[in-house]
Length: 398
Image 1 (tube, one colour):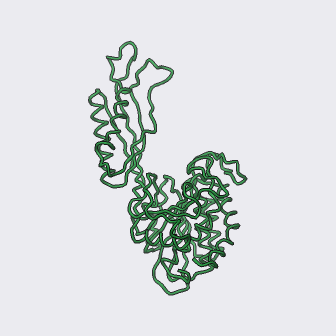
Image 2 (image 1 turned 90 degrees about the vertical axis):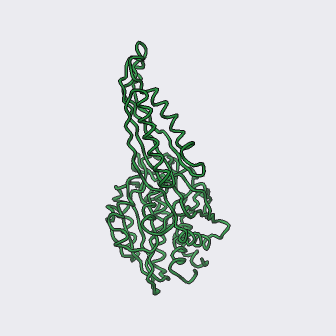
Image 3 (image 1 turned 135 degrees about the horizontal axis):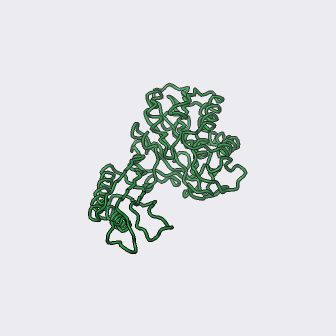
């Protein structure tokens, strides 16, 4: 990217920082992004883009055609929703919505894509079409699937689609990605064990004890990863909740215990294995204890798989912006989840991580009450999107 483009993007930072902090101060949960989507649409229209609202309920798509000839179209996607976390930063722009905050940086993601839309609308030196996709409800409320079900790529055709996420563990100005599986499938599970319960002191032998059963089950869960899944594959099964009995009646063995948790995997075969073995263990152990078991296994976001060609394009765009020494093209896969996976299952594309650590803001981890997006990263995000458009659709400083 040439120095003139860098200077123009840098000049946008004060305005974009104000937008980012305004969004941060007014966070909205997924499928509740009334104010955020309206703000996004207003800004985009003011900069002369063609805007469609209400895609997948609160999604916004802006279309921009370059002034050069070209038929290719690409999509650039960001997410807009916040999390149910009480903010503890104490910043002047802290959340004004009690119990909700932008603890994952989606305020920054939205702002950077807005900045790219503004810059490219003023400098449309490319051939083809850019679809700017502002997605609601990434944090577990199905925003990507809602937009796809509403005909996202039929109404706004693209040959490739790209996403981005900030990473506080990476320094500002650094980028990382990898071809193939990059983020995990995220599933939720609940097992309910039912027995007779009884008097735990006077007559435990007359009861079927679900407390010992659940302990055996939790221990047996560890063998799914260690003995049923190849060591070369990655998977996680974690218990996040156990409910049963009463601390007011500790001499009573409960008749029911409920256990819940999460499972993460990268391939369909491993995902199938986890669900099957959990069911077999729950039902088999329950039968051996004279109890019953019921497993509810809910499949969430699938694994995010980057396409090789588009990953190379994304890495080239980042390299053109910051230099090869600040771009990691073989980043380790992450066991977190991201519903951009659904868009990548529908169209070729790639998802990259962008450094957000250090500088003038906290480097606290994502999904924590002390997190705040680092505004020093804004020009790099805008610059990456602009560089990516020029890699895909051409431009003077490609």
